[in-house]
Image (cartoon, rainbow, N blue to C red; front, side, top):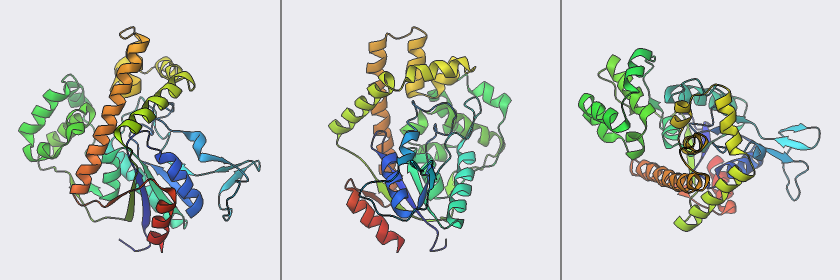
Length: 324
C-alpha cells in the first residue's frame, strides 16, 4: 500500500445522510464518489434504493463557497459530482460481491490515477469491507443448474447446508448473512467447486479513513419514516416497481431485492392493503438499519477504526488532517 493511495469511506445505516456528506466532501476535496450499495448497481431501481441522483447536481454558482472549479459545469447552471458503480447492470442480471469488488478497485484506481480523491460511500457493510480489507474472493463462475436447485430452499435450510459443508465459514456469518438467500446460495455454489474456500482478507490496497454517521433510535426512526413517505407519495416508488414489472422482472425477482421492492410487490399483488404495506415496510427498514449498525460494530471488533461523527466541520477537519 502506497502512502498516496488514500480514500475516504462514508458509512452508516440507511437514511443517515451518507450521500449528502459524500457530495459535500467531494466538492471540497476534489473527489469522486464510489457507491457501496448492493442494490444501487441496478438500472431503473432509483427511488427504492435511494440513489438520490439529484444530490450529485449542485446549482452553480454555489453561494458562500470558495473552491477551485474542478468539476464539470453543465450549461453554466450545475456542477456535476462524478459518481461510479451506480446504474451499471440490468436488474435481470445476477451481480455478486466479486464483480462489485473488481469494479470498485478499477474505479478507485482510475480516480487516484487522475489525481482526485476517491470517496467510497454506502451502507452495504459487506461491500465496504470487501474493498477496504481487500477480501480475497473466489473467481469461480456461476453454476446455473446447482443454483436453480438451491434456490428452492429457504435461508434457514441453506444455512444448515453451509454449516455441514464449512462450519468455520458458517460460524463467521452475522445474522444478515444468515438470512440472505442469494449470498448463501453463492457460498454453496463456490464450495461445490472448491471445498477449501474461505473468505479471507488480503493486504490492504488503500489507506482508508472511515467516517460513520448514526443517530439515536428515535431520530433514526423518524428519518426512516419521513423518507419512506416521501418516496411513496412524492417520488412515485410504487410506479417504479410497476415499471420494473412491466420490463419483465418476475414477482420473485422483485421480492428477492427485499424491503421496498418486496413489500410493494406484495401490495401490487393484493397480498397487503396499502396502510399495512407502509407499516410493515417501515418496520422492516428500521430492522435493516439495526443490522447495518450491527455489521459496523462487528467490523470495529475486527479492528476497523470508524470515526463516528455528525458535525460537518469536525468531519472536514478530520479529512483534511488525513490527507496531509
